[in-house]
Image (cartoon, rainbow, N blue to C red; front, side, top):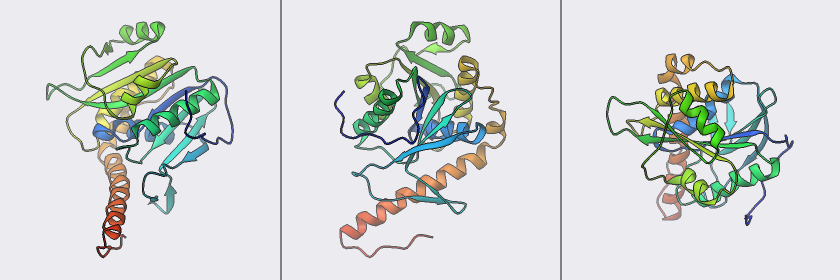
Length: 242
């Protein structure tokens, strides 16, 4: 794999499970990784930014939220790649970043989380795609269906094309481009059954609206800042954020 960059990590756990979540349809990937960080004892072992994107950072409850951060949970030997940075036009770079982390750590499994549009308004299913036969059996055993047909775009699409290692995708049906914590909770339930993370998704369901608003506000501020920069570059008078 040709490298455009190397992600600097402060520690390098061996053979971890790597779960990545970038903003996508329903923000499912970002909500899942955010929930994991909230409910597992994790340490930050790295952060990154994409030079091709505007230099923006979110502030939430007085704390800086980096565009992309890497965290480690020792109990489950789990690495979480959490991003609030939009990936439009940098999907290949984002995929390279994830694969670079996996290569540095010799990841045991790579799991990409995505939201997909629900064909039926009443459906809220989770589908899988994997090149690991043993995990496929586990998914089937707990009632998760293989994604038979679909068009996958974004970071997950780039990973499916470029990954030359064990690769898994979990797709949660969602009905809206707005944050969908309920769809994310179903993914949490699948992860718990497959890997035994001992994480109850019920708090996510109970706090869905609050959780959705939190991420929606953070990402909206980042997008707003990007728009202001673009206006400034075009000679328009910027509007201050606050």
